[in-house]
Length: 386
Image (cartoon, rainbow, N blue to C red):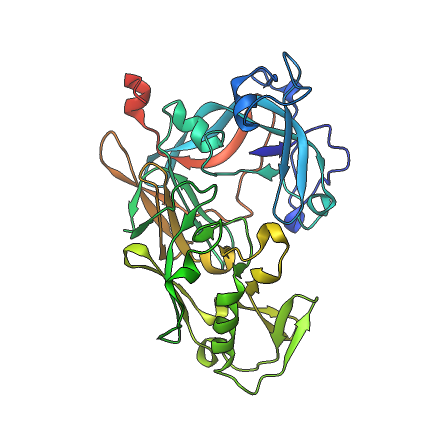
């Protein structure tokens, strides 16, 4: 997790849709403090000691993403305030101390007004993530869910045990950095594509990476080619063109849901993921473009990866259970509500959706504030259990 800090002079003041951005200032916070190189967190996040970083020197922060964008700065510790679920569509304020990156330098793509943001709230599997930090103090369960509303924008994000709706789960591939799951088959228009079993298990990065931080979906060449060929066979007279040297596009005047096949990806434990034509075909000017991307043509570090981003995750409730090392999803109306279980009383409380315009941005006054919907492990707090 990182946020823009007050010293970032080149960072824009407004971002997506003109939203006003906030800048964290540690000196304005009564609880904020620098994290030194001697702090155990600094050693953990860097997987050991870093040359030139020792004693009370500030621990350097650096985050680089797959598209080459990055944020640089230093680590700080402060109190995160969040909304704890207290009843149906009701919350009360709670807080916890976490360490996060204080970004003072951003790459050009992160400083453009269209892509600029307050920061990135990562919920990865590492023990240094915000979720892991809160869980290690007994404040939350290592479970969370998101539902990205591809129709109205916004959606639902919650930490805790989501019990409504019921979601079928599939096991995470062990010993992987990301949220990887094993795919077993690809189905186009109710026809299973003929792939050998090793197609889904080859390479160092096992399985499919589920990544809400990625926009499109990337498939290795051995899957991408037959999949796109089968989709386009439904409209053999299309005239294809390449846009921005990257996207395969075409002119089509009819309903894409009527003219193209649905795609199903099948996973272990009989879990499947449906992607409808209007989800994998996106409009560009007067054309439709194919959202599937060939990872076999990417740089070596991303070569032949299988990554499912928002293209396939939108309008689905996605559950991450790190305690049981499983993940699952179901098609859902992300403008509605979900049921979050109170681990003490056993009661289930409704958590509603939030629109983008209604979302809370980061502030840095008495403490760092996030709008999070969290079901706390009350018994852990009261009894001191882990």
